[in-house]
Image 1 (cartoon, one colour):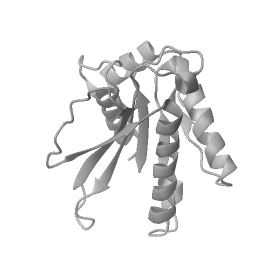
Image 2 (cartoon, rainbow, N blue to C red):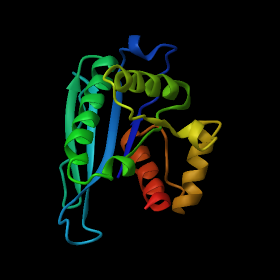
Image 3 (cartoon, helix red, strand yellow):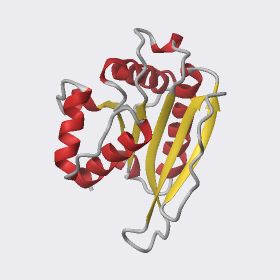
Length: 182
């Protein structure tokens, strides 16, 4: 199972003090019918600055959108941590080896990605959990967001991938990783 965390471009040296229209997306899939292979519903949890005026997409047959208005980047990241922790605790009980199969990769804009990973990993460490969020840029030795976009375009055979839409960008990364790991 893959969790992909993305954000819009947050032009700030310290994202914890950023307060101007932020969006974080967490994308993963759920089995619709566990006995049928390939029957997945993609879940998009979207954490956005309260009052931003986000147009909420309606859920469709294979896509589910859940919106979470928050007051700060820190609150968004803490809620993402709570969400991941809950999933790890509850889903890992269903299968002993599931925890080893859960990959959480952070693919926010290159300039802030390390801060997001560090914050989430510190929360996991503070809660005495050995789980880690991976930095896509360091894990795959990608030097920039632009290079990641180029890799995704080639991998998914499309020219229509843009990093400024965090939900669509996250979905493209999720699809590329899903094909690579599963």
